Image 1 (cartoon, one colour):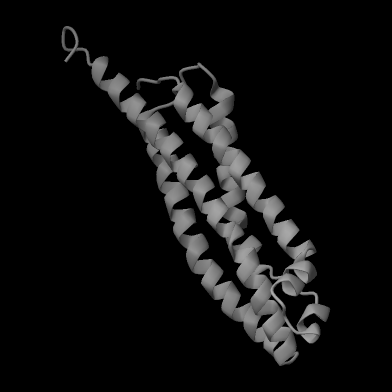
Image 2 (cartoon, one colour; image 1 turned 45 degrees about the vertical axis):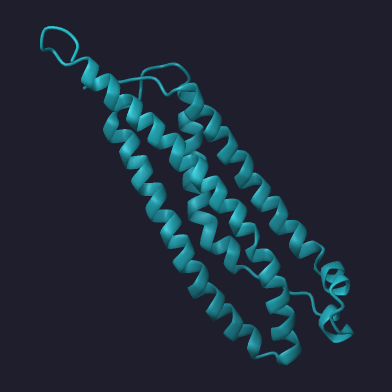
Length: 176
């Protein structure tokens, strides 16, 4: 089994993925903490501004994706110039990341519906307040999607490089 080192571009994209993941988390916290200012800025009624809600669906939907992606990217970065990547390992990382990205989108919709139902029990103002903050907090998922795209490209580059190196090392009396 031939092993290859991860290209520098893949490691740079992995760093970008980690930075974007962290930025998504910071933006989510800022959206929650600054929700009253956001509601006042958009001229919501005072009743809506008075309610403080914490929508958990964006965080819960992206939690597994975030943790897995963080571990995978740290593995990619820490490998440095050591030949540890194979075509199968890179492909497994890409498939896992893609499946988790798809599932986070599905789970966001499911968790969002459940959370809306829970907040609806507390009245119209609470539901409207949740809706306003949830919309803002969901925008942090866009940054997380950008992070996942960077990670997918990084793992794809590593898998492609391993595949090319594997073809170049075929024992057929030279290069093909």
